[in-house]
Image 1 (tube, rainbow, N blue to C red):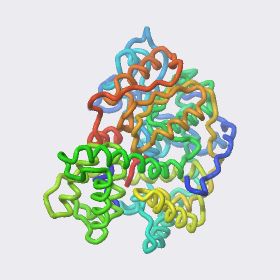
Image 2 (cartoon, helix red, strand yellow):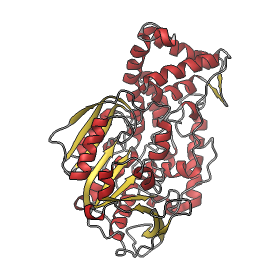
Image 3 (cartoon, rainbow, N blue to C red):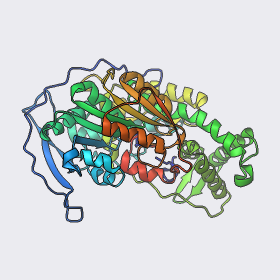
Image 4 (spheres, rainbow, N blue to C red):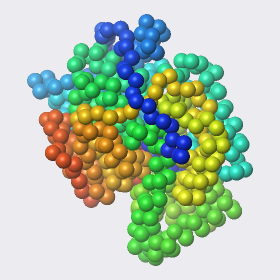
Length: 506
């Protein structure tokens, strides 16, 4: 089994030969009632008085604006300098499943003053999350392990698990469930815009938040102002293909990691050549299959080692250190175990609701068996995880076609070259879809979440200039990484805040 203890984050988010067809975007549904009168109040006694909260009501189904309503909780910090105020800056930390209600407080401690002077910082819990009519299907911790290694002997039980997960959600929420989608969340964002009395919104989205931002620009291009997409997904591969990109991205990252680690054999003792490092890793996987490794509270077989190490190969030093600890654990020696990341029912339930409800997935379990067996052979680190069956095989059909992102809205895409959760080819694909965008790539950057995270002062400067002036670079920009960017040990803290579950392993 896979351990969350050794699975650094996104984003728990979030394709195979039978990739879901991505249809042209349907016209935006009616937006429902007109702008609402907001009642702002202090969010809580233990937060600053300037940090205000409110709730709006939005249609569960925008095709029936007079029908059932749900809550969307929003928060704000007003622009620091009213004389320089431009408008509002919305945030989404990722997911799907990540709470964004607290983002104004988080970003107020990160953004330069020039940005805080110009924007009201707006946070919100997307529909189904946290304070916004949350979805919680009643899943157990074991059921919330959604990416599972393919094995002939366990595939039947994986099918049963996937069906049970979907049935639990369907039994609790019925037809309401199909209206918790990225397209409806984008409509909610526009309802927030209207309630705030703004003609346009600016936006910073991370990980899954880049997809949500791209969907918003496709549906509401004339209401999109300054759009920052940080650590981007390929919108044409939502969502099975985004998960499968973890497997394709892991292979070059692994090759890079073995070369780097071999050059530091004196420090880590994992092998003096890339082939020797590779053998050390493969031998440990085989050993764990013979005798599972006790690692903290977890017991890891070979798949657990592979699954937990996948993202670590992108963070070379952290990956080497973790493999040293795993070898020590296999030898029965004391080890340093990373703290666990606990995935809650709301987080995972909403994640599955969005990724299953946004697009169509293969329905025949045999498709997953075939794809997982194939990818286990050609992408041995993680292919079986990425292509194995999920609850989406048993989900109800989407209520509307998936969004085909294809527009010329101006946007800035910011990306680390070695991003474990949304590998660089996905950002390249996002730029092809967002034809008015520019891409800032952090050369040799190892991070998921770049802007104001200490990854690259250069990338921060380009992004801040765009937010404050509205001017995109004349062409794509390549930035150097800072000498000491955040390690993967810091990344879980970043990701817990920024992107919630989805693009996260385990």
